[in-house]
Amino acid sequence: MGNKAQIHIIDVTNRDGVQTSRICLSKLQKTMINLFLNEMGVFQSEFGFPVTRHETNYLNANLELAKLKVISPIRLGGWVRATKEDVRAAFKLAPQIRHLNLSISTSDQMILHKFRGKLDHVSVVKEMVEAVKLALHEGADSVGVNAEDASRTRLDYLIEFANAAKAAGAARIRYCDTLGCDTPFSISERIKVLAEAVSMSIEIHCHNDLGMVVANSLAGAKAACDSGCDAYINTCINGMGERAGNADLVSVILSLKYGSGMQGYPLSEKINLKAAWKTCKYASYAFGVPIPINQPGVGANAFAHESGIHADGALKDRRNYELYDFEELGRGEPEIIETGRKITAGEYSGIKGFRNVYEKLELAFRNDEEAARILELVRYANVHNQKPLVDEELKFIAAYPDIARKIFTMTP
Image (cartoon, rainbow, N blue to C red; front, side, top):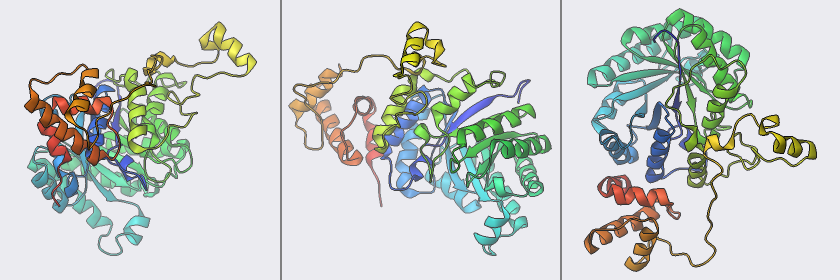
C-alpha cells in the first residue's frame, strides 16, 4: 500500500448506474462512458456483468479496446456473484477479463431472510473463498470481494469474512452500505475497526437513501487511510444508481480536493476534472435524465449568482462566493447551437447527408466503399441507441468500425 495511503475512484455507472429503475444505456453508450471515465483519470470502471449474455459482445469489444490502449490506463472490472459457477462463466464468456469483484451478502438479515437456508454464515465464507481462488487460478490480475449489506453486518463476522478474503488472495474488501443506512459517524467507526483488523485496501460503496452518500464515502475513505489502508470510493456519474442513487463522481472528487480537512488525503494524480463537464453532459443525454440545476460543479446554477450581495462579491473576486473555478471542470467554452439548416445522420440516412455530417466533423473517407460501410454502422447505431448520435459516438464508429459492429451485435 506504500508509505502513504491513497484514495482511488472506481466508477460503477456501467454496473450500478444502469440498474437505476426505468432507465438503461445502450452498449455503445456504455462504451462511451468507459472512454469518458478513462479521460477523467478514473482508476477502474466496473463496466458490466460478465455472466449476463446480452453483455458478452460489448464486454469483449471493450476489452479489445483496452488491449489496443484506446481504453487505457483505466482498468475494466466485471461484477459477478461470489460463486464458482459465476467465475467459470465469466472467463468462458469474457476470456480476456482480468479484474473482477465478487459479491455475496454478509448481514444476518440477508443470510437469514434472503438465502433462507441455502447458505449460513460458515458457507458464505466458504463460497467466497472458493470463488476468489478460482478467479485467480483462471487468470484474474485482481479480485475485489464485496460484502453486501456490510453496514448491517456484525463487525466480528465482517472481519472474519475480510480476513478470509485476504488469505484467499483478494486485493480489496468492498464495504457496501447497501441500504444507505450509515452516517458519516457510523461508517467512520466501523471502517476504522475493519481496516485496523485486516490491513487491506477498503472499497467504499454507499447509497444515498438518507442523502449522505458523498459524506459517507469520504468518511469511510478517511477512516481507511487513517488506518494505513488505501481506499477506493465507488461513484456513479451524476449520482445515478439504484433507488436514491450512488455517490456522484464529480461531487466526490471536488470534496476530496476542496473539502476542509481532506487535503492530506492524496487522490490519484491522474484525475482530470477538465473532462467532467462533457462527461456529465453525455451521461445525462444517454440516460435521458437532466442534471439538477443545483448539482455541484456541473449544475446550471453551480456558478450562478443573483442576489445583490452575492453578485457584487463574485464580480469583485470570485473567491468571495466560489470555492473552485468553473474552468477546472471544463466549463466556460462557448457552445454553438445551430439554428439554421441541420443535416443529421439517422437510421434512414442516405450517403450525401451522411457525408455532410462527417465533413462537419472534419473526417474524410478513403473511398465510397468505406463511406458506405460506416453509413451502415451509423444506421445500426441509431437503432441501437434509439436517439440521435452525438459527435463523439460518430467519431468512435468511424475510428473503430469493426469493434463498433461487435458492440451493436447481440445473439439471443
